[in-house]
Amino acid sequence: MQLSSFPVLWNTAMPVKSQSPVYLIALGSFALGMASYVMAGLIPMIEHAFAVPVAIAAQLVTAFTLAYGVGSPVVVALLPAHRQRGGLLLALGLFVLANAASAVTTNFTLLLAFRAIAGVGAGVYLATGIAASTALSRPEQRGKSIAVIMGGMASGTVLGVPLSLLLAERLGWASALWLVAALGLIAWLGLALRLPALAAAPSVPLKRKLALLTDGHVMVILLVSLLAAIASLGMYTFIAPLLAAPEYGDIHSVTPYLWAWGVGGVLGSFLIGPLVDRIKGPTLTLSIMVILAAALLLLPAAASSGAWLVMLPIAIWGAVGWALQVPQNNELIKARESQGDGNLAIALNESALYLGSAIGAAVGGFLLILHWPVWILASGAGAVAVLGASIQMLNMRLTFSKSRCEASSR
Image (cartoon, rainbow, N blue to C red; front, side):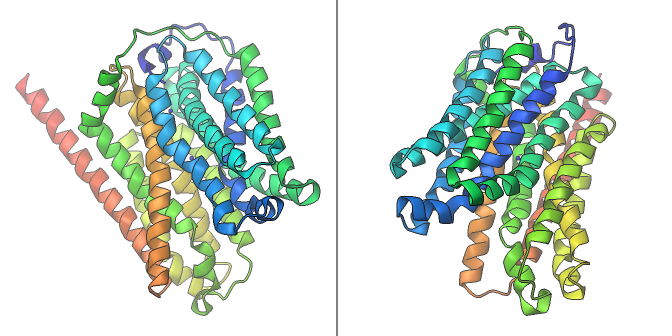
């Protein structure tokens, strides 16, 4: 679950009459959450409609995620600093048009291209949307605003995807993409009317933007996000094999458990907002990583103890997995405030999430091919989360020691 100049976007002197644009941005992120996951459910219909093998149809998901994770940071880095509002509307408009074009095309190659374009638009929109939401909020409410955006995306995954798939079963696969495009269009029209002008910022050269890759603090944040995604999103791919194993419940339908994970994600995304505004970001991130590790490590034992008992760690895992990116994005904004490239940092964070998801899924699949026991996947995911928590703790200690040294030298 990323533009160029945050210092100006954080200008609290900017007159803001209403926070309604934040909720309109969240509506757009709801559509984004749907688009990110619905195509996986449409693959059987696409396979039949275009007469392509399932392995080829699955590349529609790859095209979206790769374009989102790799293409969007590049576009964000190239967007001019004085076009903040226009960049957001352009990205959302591109996303809407690409989904509409996906719904009407009869050529699979074009469909593949449109999914990639939609992925770029989605990634750029999320970056610019988070930036705009912080601009429209008082400093003490920035965490809550980011939580609203991420909660919208989580809701789109949990509520929007099943709804769109139900619609697709009745009216055809294209209807799901029409629903995504319609919601995105409503958000675009609302933002075009309600989003105030965002003050321009001095242009930041591309070379200076890329300098954030040498910022040790930023790189640690991105590394923790990567490890969290490997653990959380990677393991999500293998809920079904774990619960289907005879020793872990022999469950044939994982739908209730996916709902538990998703509902936990929605609650976590929204409830984390007030905590971000009250608790230091690094401390909150550490706590979340510890809870994530515990939930994943407890999965096999809970599953073997009872089919309903396992819902508790699954719901907790979903809650903290989705909640993590609120303090992470908030810390990235703070870290790059003076450099003016916070949007790019958030874009890279989203890339870390998608890359982590791909790594987790690939490694887990490889282990299953080697016939490793399925409990290894949950334990391995928990171990990765422990590693992320350890890195976060070490970074906090180093930061504290550095602050003490600087204070004593004054």
